[in-house]
Amino acid sequence: MAARLKILGITLVATLALSAGVASVASATGFKFLSEKPSTILVGKQHGVNTDVLETNGGLVTCNELTYSGAHSGMEATELELSPKWSNCSAFGFISVPIDSEGCKYRFTTGAKEGSNFEGSTDITCPEGKRIDITAPGCNVTIPTQTPTGGKITYTNLSSGSTREITIDVALTGIHYIEDEISGLPNCTSAGVTTTNGTYTGALLLTGESENAHVGLWVESQSKLHSEAEHTSLTGSQSTTNVYTFGILLGSVECEVATFDGTVTTKEVTEITLKPAYSKCTGVKREVTTHMNGCAYVITFGEEASSGKLDIECPSGEVIETTVDAFPGGCTIEIGSQSPGGSVDVKGEGSGKTRDLVLTWTIEGIKYTRSTCEAGGEGTNGALTGSVTVKGENKSAEQVGIWVE
Image 1 (spheres, rainbow, N blue to C red):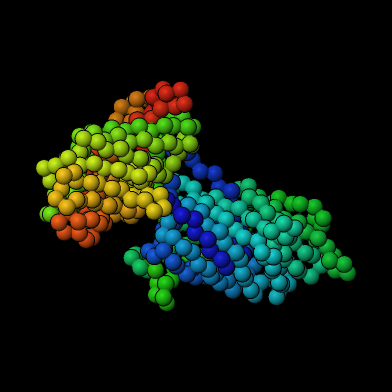
Image 2: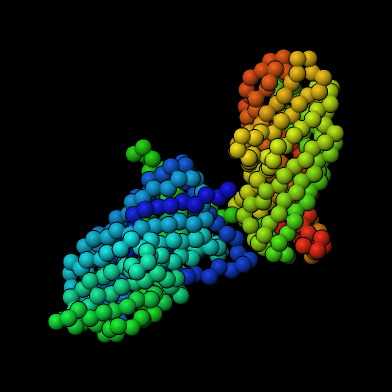
């Protein structure tokens, strides 16, 4: 459910700051980018004084006035796309050197939390035939689409609440570039060849805004489901009774049988989708029939491996329909796509290939609509409690270990 955040308007600092191919450790905790609101303007600036330096064979390139602007939709993401803008730059001892992005963008993806550090990986993507262009007297330097081969980027949270913002500290190596001599003033040291020894150091501060007010922007750890198999079928059965509650009028609906199924196609994921099937349900002293109509529970794992959240997702135009049989005048309760409150407790059991998960949900604030039920209307006090044991199987229907860390 994590949506992609697309940011337009970042500077050369971000260009190279967000271009390090930093490898993550498989066992480390992942993380994501979060914003307080689903629509956020991003404003950035240089963090520190004269700290942003690109070094090539020809010398140093620095920019003393760095600004950032952009916008994104969504409240969380694992990937950002950025476009650069900068001014007042110097190169190889010359001042007022123009730098043109030529439409190149910078994409960086969340990596892993190593100890207390949030580290990620980035690359530069340019339109066909375009490159970042630095035009200094006697030498033109271009930076093409690439993933630099070394270095480190560290993301740090500052402040709290709505004043939260992110600093990005950069120390990169292995940046690829090409120097071309300008006729009349040859000043390149390695003209005409692709060189891979570029380095970059710098820092930037990224802030969120909405309606001219500061909006919290931060990075946060995110645990992942791990599986022994590349393709894993998930099957679940309730460990404790699943109970929907719909206020005083309708009370609770309990189901004697509840099964769940889903699939993951990689060994690590930050969320799983489980499709429930309920039967032998009762409520209001009557039998109850529940039709999921393709709706599913999406479990997103949290900062700690022991917690997560539950969202309800339905196909377009569909809702969960719960009908109370033999109710005077009829009674149907509908639940649509939503992100209710509450939490999911995640607990691992077993060892090796028998490792499985027990998910215990305590969900509240579910929105629903009553059709008749002697008093039609809408409610926001729905709740869901219960637990399910989820196991994994490979393509040969053999159990494989699944766990969260």
